[in-house]
Image 1 (tube, protein in one colour):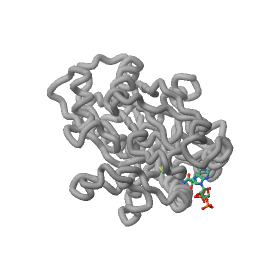
Image 2 (cartoon, protein in one colour; image 1 turned 180 degrees about the vertical axis):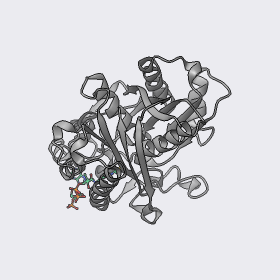
Image 3 (cartoon, rainbow, N blue to C red; image 1 turned 90 degrees about the vertical axis):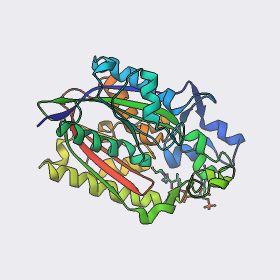
Image 4 (tube, rainbow, N blue to C red; image 1 turned 30 degrees about the vertical axis):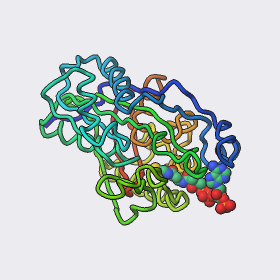
Length: 322
Ligand code: COA
């Protein structure tokens, strides 16, 4: 049986950088409040004509280059996104067209901020069972399109971007294990009420934007991430002190600090991009991974714990030997 290896990473952030101070003229907030409660200093915002698939393409090309593969080697495309270009076809199919490859499967995974963990779980199963041997997996989001720019409790939290990995079949792990969960009873803690089969007529109203009970999400995230990290370690007979790097979903620095503390990991062993990127949902983990691989912190052979929590509610973790 094959194992899944991360052969290369890539990231893309839109050119436009929006600093906290810019929100001071939009809503009743301050740079100090945002930094203190979230750790966010700035975020990137997609241009009006820049789509999720455009960002996915830029990140994908960088990952393809880093993995030193040819586009023709790719035999499956997965895109994790909650902000697709269109209702259909999937953003993965649009990305496939941009890449100029044909006759391979391509589909989207929709698990909000846990999208990268869900997609990684699926990709790993494809590789281990021989269904694919070279997967392009991208997390890409344009949350700026679904933010209510008049709601101070949500508009300051999110950013746009894309992160990609090339996953190949190898003789050694690789991905040691993945663990994904959901509990739909918490649907309304974090959601966009307007959709297609429900609320289509509300797409031009407030219901088309993110609504969140931030405080409740915060508490659930901290307790759940602790439990799922323990589960991943136990599944591999590993100890928390074996972890070289924690690569968490980047929602809030306070959540990340709490997760690191539970693992006895100093913040220096935690990859943090939330200050620069804010919460880019499905894109946040692959973007953080790419930053730390490219700046040399994450090295081959390191043990990584990836973990995420998001709308659904959904959550997940993975232990990866990079
Ligand atoms: N600027 C200034 N004040 C703000 C504000 C902002 N941008 N956003 C909210 N506030 C206010 C609230 O209105 C509230 O005012 P009140 O006491 O007069 O009602 C006060 O700050 C405290 O709000 P609270 O929600 O208790 O703050 P908090 O410390 O929990 O921080 C979040 C709010 C949203 C930053 C925090 O709850 C959080 O990060 N939650 C997780 C959200 C998340 O990550 N979601 C995505 C999951 S993937």
